[in-house]
Length: 73
Image 1 (cartoon, rainbow, N blue to C red):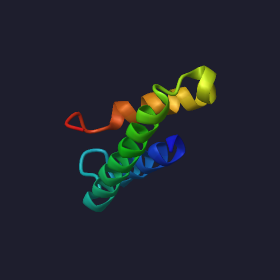
Image 2 (cartoon, one colour):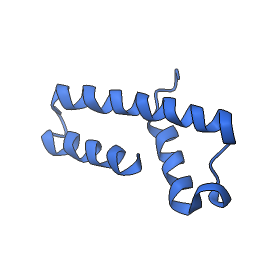
Image 3 (tube, rainbow, N blue to C red):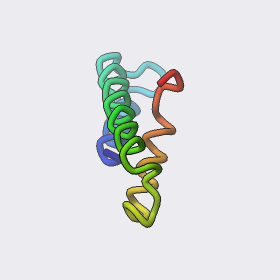
Image 4 (tube, rainbow, N blue to C red):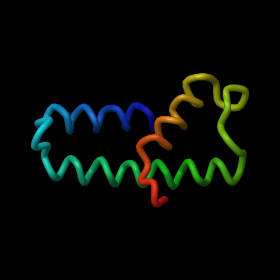
């Protein structure tokens, strides 16, 4: 999920920082929502995916998902 998160953001930035491609921004928001929903499932089932559960990269990826999630979710 972290790679997909970063890849779509790079696409958006590459499309134009001041006027990014609207379709890419919409795709990014959809991906953010899907990742947030999946992380919520993980949280319900396992709690926070800490280093002991998913390793340092996995835990960092979880934080990235939270950081990019819509605050309303």
